[in-house]
Image (cartoon, rainbow, N blue to C red; front, side):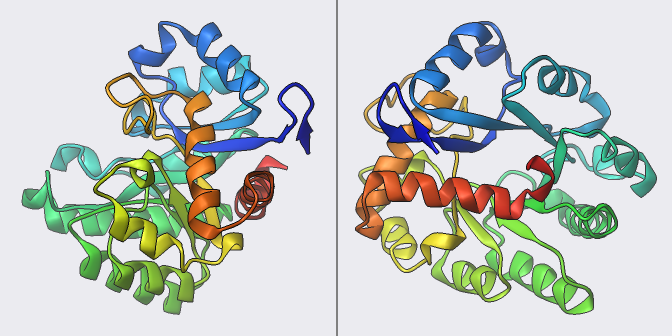
Length: 266
């Protein structure tokens, strides 16, 4: 699909946090700038599904916004516990298209390691039952998360995206072998991220998504500013360079990948 205004293929921001004040305070401007950059859809992510009213409301107000729900691993230990049926109830919403973000973060939250692992497995169980993909956050936990994902997949398959991928080549290879997707963020534009660019250069184009994780991780050339969905264009531009393909080809294929993974969005 072509955006006629800028003569570029449309692109999708597959992971952002539109419910954060930095973005909601100027939401009309944020959506307008995204549209001008050919961003056709945005997936806004809830980090605690018990407090997801605003996220759901955004998806209901704006046709271009989908949402996902889960419990972020950085939540306090007591918040990581939930009943599967409570999350499954939210899955009934027509614009709820993914489970997460969930995962393991041993950088900020090593104290809750056992609770994080249990919560991750619960999210995967819900994803299987709801037939929705899991959105994974991984930080300083490559071996542990690789082990959980592999063991759970062997038990019963599920689909998955490694959000904002910035982990090791080991985890990238493990994820691709299981048929999962890797999501590219503004980190690939950073000067000190050559190792990550090398990893992505070996990932099949049909297994890559793009995202902003806005309002965080603003790509070059806007470092120092708040990130927003419009800036996913800079991620796509760098991604095309990394994989040595035309930018429109990259934008078009990652958009197709988004719909292949998030089938409920079609």
